[in-house]
Image: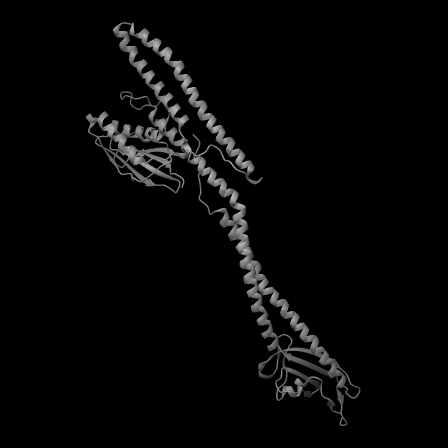
Length: 445
């Protein structure tokens, strides 16, 4: 018997798409939020340096040597900020140990280097440009430095960055809403397919109807073909069962008539066999007709109620054994099994318990997973040997030939449970007898 496939619950496809899109959008937003302001700062610094180079050219043009041979500026520069103390715009001329500087530097000077940056008055961070040039009257090179404070530039950059993050937030929120709408719209055919499958499962229709995108249309067609094939198999089985029933009735009736004319001793030998043959034929034909008519997808039954009904019948049949059945199943528990099939499954196991128990048969449940439940049926009888748990489920196997039966009960239970994607396991009961563990599916919500 093939193993039951293991089903694992995962998060929804919508969640996967939304989480992946959100993470990707967050990464892009963060990258843009940090990279774009860096580009803007580089641009602003470059523009400021271009402006400072204009002042550098102006200083180079007006620098001269006075009558005493000292470096001097015979005229003021065009920008009055060079005359305002700590204005944020500075220059200095250095030749040897001599330095002249703008009035804006007042009693300070430009310090620092290119690696660590330059500082001006009040520890202002500076943008600087430098140049070396020569004058005919000066033997050493003259180093000219023009600098501007970055405070205004950094303030502007801070405002731009703040506005940029605000725009990025609005844009990301809009894109996220658009992604959510797109995912919802794209997954709507799957949601409609789920609704149609629920209608099929509830027995409201026999196939999946409606128009679907070409990507999932092959799946819908295959499901419809599978449903049609499933229904055809059930109808065919029911028809064959009916035909077989009619075909066997006449030969069995003839045999019964012939046996009735035999001597009493011969009748006593043959009639029980014919009765058993008739019983088995009716039993299996009934099961075939029942399987053909059952809607397995919409099945839902309360096992607690069925156990109570079966125990009432068994109490009458096995009244001489004084066996008590204790039903501990939750009265609200439902399993996805057709009522007659559940009666067949549970009834065989309970009847075995009544046959072999000393005093007690116990029926209770154990949590399995979100898709199934375990029903435990155990007794305090002698049980069976550990090496017989597998073989006793096989068709026709009987461990005790003196007890009435066909050896088909446990095999039928196992096959019916497997047809509902469940299974049957036998083990030693804590009560001392046999413990039958049934794994049965729960209804899908």
